[in-house]
Image (cartoon, rainbow, N blue to C red; front, side, top):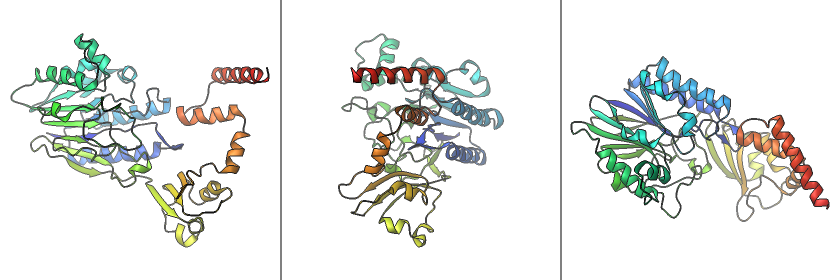
Length: 376
């Protein structure tokens, strides 16, 4: 059988305030084309379909359109799990009848022990879970850490192994020995939330989500497909894409996804960035992180640069200057702004929607209370 492995779509995510829906749509269309061209037998989606547990309505619509197109229009089986960014309860809506169209979506730990039976493969779909869920399922309070919980989970899964089939695990967690990038939610505290790879040794292949770098773990049969887009400057040099997994060879093949707008880093002087000979050679519709080598103050530096490079996601100086997103003048302007406007902008950026009338009313009352108390 041939599977397409993907993960970490993070629908609804913004890149330093810039909407990424067009980029995510373009990446999805490339996934669909690869799947149809290669005539895959199914698509593995290893968690983090959404970027937040309460996605905006338009983000839910986008996810529905994508999943329906793959499953109902293209008739491709889907094998998906909830990630740590997804809301398991919300994502599970409709799952009782999904399997009738070949869409298997597991969001609860108990579902992981019912493998999907395919002609030569058993697929175990293990959604993201906290140790407390394992304590409840196994009725064992000693399962305090993820490695302990995972040992119990794997032991129960192995009891379901069919001897005449290959066993594939789909999961969403941090595997011991992996490296992280700046765009991933930290799931480890003192290393306690890392899953030892030797626990996974009895599976023929493990398809993982959570880490955005496909090369985060160097293990022959445990692979991250990585995210579809670059979500931080630490990922500038990474190639994004999907994996094609043939269950006969169990040797995944990487297929690159070309970004609609890529992410770049520029390190140079302010005057060169404004020089037409220089900037005409740059893909100025793309996203940029810029590091200035200048030593002198530059008035309105971000606004002036954005006239040429509209999608600047980070601006800093070399040496000890730090970030330049707010120079002294911009900071003063920020402090003089109406706090309610600042709150509205922040909420729009984080929640991808505007404050409701009731929320705005509550904020006004809270601000008035603070002002009155400060005068007392």
